[in-house]
Length: 163
Image (cartoon, rainbow, N blue to C red; front, side, top):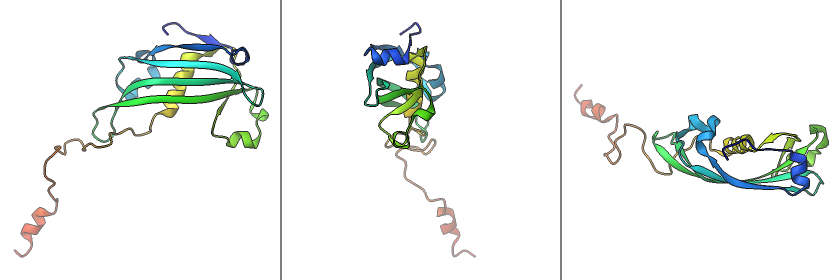
């Protein structure tokens, strides 16, 4: 998706619109500080529908792999992104009941005549990423992977009894 794609959130849902394609990772500029490499693309699909409350909804799916920086070892790590979101559009916050606000199965956004799909996708990715990504098994930087652990108190043990 090299050009900007704008949709009317209300009409897209009412008409059951559908978009799909690939989004180059390099175009997601707000993600760039979190990535070790911006090569590749993410596959996306956006489908419109009317929800049970008769409001326009978007079903958003994004799949791909992002190269994040592990916050433990500071090396690159492949993070598999499999994002699924239901976004429901409302005219104002006053239109929502307390029950709807507490419902975690969907998120609410204001209706927009010109909703930029790439910006929406980037917003959802930023919200879905872990705050401190890290490998399941890695060592701290400079710890020398595989070296025997030496106690910082081993020097003290040699001094014990010499006083």
